[in-house]
Length: 567
View 1: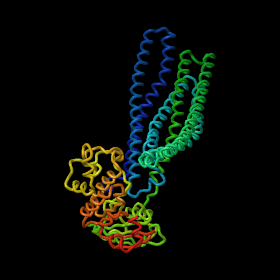
View 2: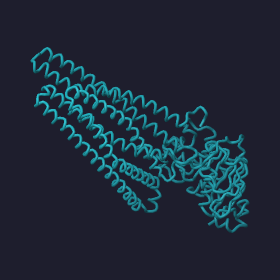
View 3: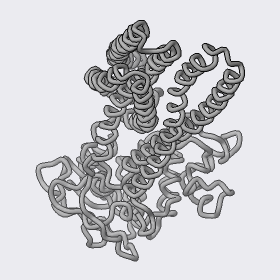
View 4: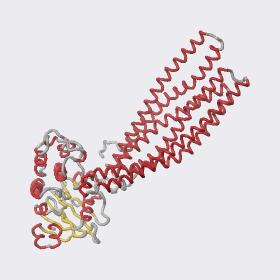
């Protein structure tokens, strides 16, 4: 992150400040609206006592005009208040989505630990939306408090007993509503967890659809998703039941409360303590109170769900980084010499390995787990349990991960393509303004030019989500071209040609050697065609260095190497 770029915390702080101002503005308009709503039954009572009972047509028209003005104020205050609240809610959700995405993309990693990609997407969308809605709920809660306060004052002026009932009964109703929201909060969190897991399973199944069809495992995959979906459905139904019970009980309590106010008001009217107009006002205010009290029930439900979603978002934002330390810049210029000292790669002993600058080095493996461990260490997705990895003599743990990955690019064989054109997947930042000379050389080296000629619109052809319109071999070639086009000082490739035919693989091997001549390149593969063009080959055998030499030498002299790459 550059010195002029605001931190995630600064962005969140400024956003929260802006949202608070909008909530306050919306609450102000809402309070005006609630004041007007509460005054309507009071004005109607006045009309009855002063105009209708007295049969004064002039006063009747005057009060009716006052009511018309009041309704205009009610309309505009509600519109302005609701707009401010909705904007605050949407901006809060947007800010949280950005914060989650920023944390997931943080070079130090760690946010995705234990979560499927679909689960992270659910946190960034549904959970962020629920937490953002808390802004609207808070604003509505302020409206409700204002409405109850105005009603209580109006009832106190009309009748002290009625006002006291409101002042004493409302806190009791709020406390009961809070207690009733606790089961909803617990079940809402479980609902979101299950829904996120179901989304993750669905995303995995869609991503592996071709493999599943090839294995004939569609039925098993569907059954797996059906089980997961049923668990999610059960959690959703439990949350819905909790919400319905909470809403129903709160409404029953609220109805009883309103009935009590109407009963006391009616008795006072029979005793002569209230006039007809005052009774109408009291009953109207009691009915008006139903709205704010129902709002409190809704606010409690929204806050319960918001707290559950906030806990899930906080879990992602506060996740421990995958790698710690390291803030130094990469030494310039980058020569590209990599060195491992005592690094454990799945075996009982540490590995000492030098990957010289400027050479094309092949690493063959007898155990795929050793290759994965090596790639994670070189890309600094994880720090080794023992030993150290160095770039030009500097331990990777001292370097800033973002700067390191700009210099050492580890291109996984299972990386994903993005939706868009073929060209946008190869060129940096999705630039598609016609192929430049470097891009043309990259496309030729990876044999993507052949792929482009087979597509209806060449490199401008849309490849679909995840590159699904391309075959496996075509996707691999585009991924290789993307890695080559980045021109990193150090490029580490993992099995870049497993899905292409032998003739194309041999051509790609020659193109790779020519394009990366003089720059550090490491190819982790058991492909004879790729290993044959390397300057040097290392056999990683069970977490240790089994042999070193050229491909031809090792094929002639090392049985383990022959077994690994020729069988």
